[in-house]
Length: 209
Image 1 (tube, rainbow, N blue to C red):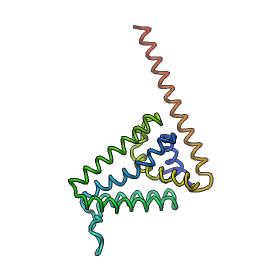
Image 2 (cartoon, rainbow, N blue to C red):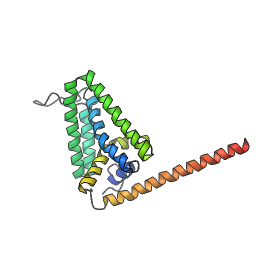
Image 3 (cartoon, rainbow, N blue to C red):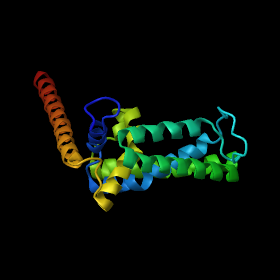
Protein backbone atom coordinates (compact mmCIF):
# COMPACT_ATOMS: atom_id res chain seq x y z
CA UNK A 1 0.00 0.00 0.00
CA UNK A 2 1.58 3.29 -1.11
CA UNK A 3 1.97 6.18 1.32
CA UNK A 4 3.15 8.78 -1.16
CA UNK A 5 5.79 9.11 -3.81
CA UNK A 6 6.33 7.83 -7.30
CA UNK A 7 4.82 4.38 -6.69
CA UNK A 8 1.77 5.45 -4.68
CA UNK A 9 -0.95 3.67 -6.65
CA UNK A 10 -3.79 5.25 -4.69
CA UNK A 11 -2.46 8.75 -5.39
CA UNK A 12 -1.99 8.09 -9.12
CA UNK A 13 -5.32 6.33 -9.50
CA UNK A 14 -7.20 9.04 -7.61
CA UNK A 15 -5.59 11.78 -9.71
CA UNK A 16 -6.55 10.10 -12.98
CA UNK A 17 -9.90 8.90 -11.68
CA UNK A 18 -10.93 12.45 -10.75
CA UNK A 19 -10.83 13.27 -14.48
CA UNK A 20 -12.63 10.06 -15.45
CA UNK A 21 -15.66 9.55 -13.23
CA UNK A 22 -18.31 9.44 -15.95
CA UNK A 23 -19.03 5.81 -17.03
CA UNK A 24 -19.30 6.69 -20.74
CA UNK A 25 -16.02 8.61 -20.64
CA UNK A 26 -14.36 5.65 -18.89
CA UNK A 27 -15.75 3.32 -21.58
CA UNK A 28 -14.43 5.58 -24.36
CA UNK A 29 -10.98 5.57 -22.76
CA UNK A 30 -11.14 1.80 -22.35
CA UNK A 31 -11.65 1.54 -26.12
CA UNK A 32 -9.00 4.03 -27.20
CA UNK A 33 -6.13 4.22 -24.70
CA UNK A 34 -4.37 0.95 -25.55
CA UNK A 35 -4.70 1.54 -29.33
CA UNK A 36 -2.93 4.87 -28.72
CA UNK A 37 -0.12 2.93 -27.05
CA UNK A 38 0.01 0.50 -29.97
CA UNK A 39 0.13 3.11 -32.73
CA UNK A 40 2.62 5.24 -30.82
CA UNK A 41 4.90 2.20 -30.82
CA UNK A 42 4.30 1.84 -34.56
CA UNK A 43 5.74 5.33 -35.01
CA UNK A 44 8.59 4.64 -32.56
CA UNK A 45 9.58 1.59 -34.60
CA UNK A 46 11.34 3.89 -37.05
CA UNK A 47 13.61 5.46 -34.43
CA UNK A 48 17.29 4.33 -34.50
CA UNK A 49 18.36 1.20 -32.62
CA UNK A 50 19.90 1.93 -29.21
CA UNK A 51 21.22 -1.58 -28.59
CA UNK A 52 22.44 -4.42 -30.76
CA UNK A 53 19.90 -7.21 -31.10
CA UNK A 54 21.02 -10.56 -29.61
CA UNK A 55 22.06 -13.31 -31.99
CA UNK A 56 19.03 -15.15 -33.35
CA UNK A 57 16.72 -12.28 -32.36
CA UNK A 58 13.83 -11.54 -34.75
CA UNK A 59 15.19 -8.70 -36.89
CA UNK A 60 11.79 -7.06 -36.99
CA UNK A 61 12.12 -6.34 -33.25
CA UNK A 62 14.40 -3.32 -33.04
CA UNK A 63 15.79 -2.38 -29.60
CA UNK A 64 15.07 1.31 -30.01
CA UNK A 65 13.08 4.04 -28.25
CA UNK A 66 9.90 1.99 -28.51
CA UNK A 67 11.56 -0.91 -26.70
CA UNK A 68 12.98 1.34 -23.96
CA UNK A 69 9.57 2.99 -23.45
CA UNK A 70 7.95 -0.43 -23.20
CA UNK A 71 10.44 -1.51 -20.53
CA UNK A 72 9.96 1.71 -18.52
CA UNK A 73 6.16 1.48 -18.61
CA UNK A 74 6.25 -2.22 -17.74
CA UNK A 75 8.55 -1.77 -14.75
CA UNK A 76 6.53 1.20 -13.50
CA UNK A 77 3.29 -0.80 -13.58
CA UNK A 78 4.87 -3.79 -11.85
CA UNK A 79 6.19 -1.54 -9.07
CA UNK A 80 2.70 -0.06 -8.66
CA UNK A 81 1.07 -3.48 -8.31
CA UNK A 82 2.77 -6.81 -8.98
CA UNK A 83 -0.28 -8.75 -10.20
CA UNK A 84 -2.12 -6.19 -12.35
CA UNK A 85 1.22 -4.61 -13.25
CA UNK A 86 2.46 -7.92 -14.66
CA UNK A 87 -0.66 -8.11 -16.84
CA UNK A 88 -0.07 -4.52 -17.97
CA UNK A 89 3.60 -5.29 -18.68
CA UNK A 90 2.58 -8.29 -20.79
CA UNK A 91 0.15 -6.10 -22.74
CA UNK A 92 2.90 -3.50 -23.25
CA UNK A 93 5.25 -6.09 -24.74
CA UNK A 94 2.46 -7.58 -26.87
CA UNK A 95 1.82 -4.07 -28.22
CA UNK A 96 5.55 -3.56 -28.87
CA UNK A 97 5.91 -6.87 -30.74
CA UNK A 98 2.67 -6.36 -32.68
CA UNK A 99 3.52 -2.76 -33.55
CA UNK A 100 6.99 -3.80 -34.71
CA UNK A 101 5.58 -6.48 -37.01
CA UNK A 102 2.91 -4.13 -38.41
CA UNK A 103 5.37 -1.26 -38.94
CA UNK A 104 7.89 -3.57 -40.60
CA UNK A 105 5.21 -4.96 -42.88
CA UNK A 106 3.74 -1.59 -43.87
CA UNK A 107 6.99 0.34 -44.25
CA UNK A 108 7.54 3.93 -43.16
CA UNK A 109 5.60 5.72 -45.91
CA UNK A 110 2.36 3.84 -45.14
CA UNK A 111 2.84 3.10 -41.44
CA UNK A 112 2.97 6.74 -40.33
CA UNK A 113 -0.23 7.52 -42.28
CA UNK A 114 -2.08 4.60 -40.69
CA UNK A 115 -0.72 5.48 -37.23
CA UNK A 116 -1.62 9.17 -37.63
CA UNK A 117 -5.19 8.34 -38.72
CA UNK A 118 -5.59 5.96 -35.78
CA UNK A 119 -4.20 8.53 -33.33
CA UNK A 120 -6.57 11.22 -34.62
CA UNK A 121 -9.54 8.88 -34.24
CA UNK A 122 -8.57 7.79 -30.72
CA UNK A 123 -7.73 11.27 -29.44
CA UNK A 124 -10.90 12.75 -30.95
CA UNK A 125 -12.95 10.10 -29.18
CA UNK A 126 -11.29 10.88 -25.87
CA UNK A 127 -11.77 14.64 -26.17
CA UNK A 128 -15.44 14.03 -26.98
CA UNK A 129 -15.63 11.87 -23.87
CA UNK A 130 -14.29 14.71 -21.77
CA UNK A 131 -16.18 17.55 -23.42
CA UNK A 132 -19.59 15.90 -23.82
CA UNK A 133 -19.79 13.42 -20.96
CA UNK A 134 -17.16 14.23 -18.31
CA UNK A 135 -17.45 17.99 -18.83
CA UNK A 136 -13.89 18.42 -17.59
CA UNK A 137 -10.63 18.97 -19.45
CA UNK A 138 -8.34 15.92 -19.78
CA UNK A 139 -5.81 15.14 -17.05
CA UNK A 140 -2.92 15.73 -19.45
CA UNK A 141 -3.61 19.48 -19.36
CA UNK A 142 -2.76 19.51 -15.64
CA UNK A 143 -0.07 16.81 -15.42
CA UNK A 144 1.13 15.55 -18.79
CA UNK A 145 3.60 12.92 -17.52
CA UNK A 146 1.29 11.45 -14.89
CA UNK A 147 -1.62 11.32 -17.33
CA UNK A 148 0.35 9.50 -20.02
CA UNK A 149 1.90 7.08 -17.54
CA UNK A 150 -1.33 6.20 -15.76
CA UNK A 151 -3.83 6.07 -18.64
CA UNK A 152 -3.14 2.48 -19.81
CA UNK A 153 -2.95 1.13 -16.26
CA UNK A 154 -6.09 3.00 -15.18
CA UNK A 155 -8.27 1.46 -17.87
CA UNK A 156 -6.78 -1.99 -17.22
CA UNK A 157 -7.59 -1.74 -13.51
CA UNK A 158 -11.10 -0.56 -14.37
CA UNK A 159 -11.61 -3.63 -16.58
CA UNK A 160 -10.18 -5.97 -13.93
CA UNK A 161 -12.37 -4.42 -11.26
CA UNK A 162 -15.57 -4.42 -13.32
CA UNK A 163 -15.08 -7.83 -14.90
CA UNK A 164 -13.39 -9.77 -12.10
CA UNK A 165 -13.84 -7.74 -8.93
CA UNK A 166 -10.08 -7.29 -8.67
CA UNK A 167 -8.40 -4.80 -6.38
CA UNK A 168 -4.67 -4.55 -5.60
CA UNK A 169 -5.37 -5.03 -1.88
CA UNK A 170 -8.47 -5.12 0.33
CA UNK A 171 -10.10 -1.71 0.64
CA UNK A 172 -8.21 -0.19 -2.30
CA UNK A 173 -11.26 0.86 -4.32
CA UNK A 174 -13.09 2.21 -1.27
CA UNK A 175 -10.08 4.34 -0.32
CA UNK A 176 -9.57 5.54 -3.89
CA UNK A 177 -13.25 6.38 -4.40
CA UNK A 178 -13.09 8.55 -1.30
CA UNK A 179 -10.03 10.36 -2.65
CA UNK A 180 -11.62 10.77 -6.09
CA UNK A 181 -14.73 12.36 -4.55
CA UNK A 182 -12.54 14.72 -2.54
CA UNK A 183 -10.54 15.66 -5.67
CA UNK A 184 -13.72 16.31 -7.66
CA UNK A 185 -15.21 18.35 -4.83
CA UNK A 186 -12.03 20.45 -4.63
CA UNK A 187 -12.15 21.05 -8.39
CA UNK A 188 -15.83 22.03 -8.23
CA UNK A 189 -15.14 24.42 -5.33
CA UNK A 190 -12.30 26.06 -7.27
CA UNK A 191 -14.52 26.33 -10.33
CA UNK A 192 -17.28 27.94 -8.27
CA UNK A 193 -14.88 30.40 -6.62
CA UNK A 194 -13.49 31.32 -10.02
CA UNK A 195 -17.00 31.87 -11.37
CA UNK A 196 -17.96 34.04 -8.40
CA UNK A 197 -14.75 36.05 -8.75
CA UNK A 198 -15.45 36.58 -12.45
CA UNK A 199 -18.99 37.75 -11.67
CA UNK A 200 -17.68 40.14 -9.01
CA UNK A 201 -15.19 41.67 -11.45
CA UNK A 202 -17.94 42.04 -14.04
CA UNK A 203 -20.21 43.82 -11.53
CA UNK A 204 -17.37 46.15 -10.55
CA UNK A 205 -16.72 46.95 -14.21
CA UNK A 206 -20.38 47.67 -14.97
CA UNK A 207 -20.87 49.79 -11.84
CA UNK A 208 -17.91 52.01 -12.77
CA UNK A 209 -18.94 51.98 -16.42
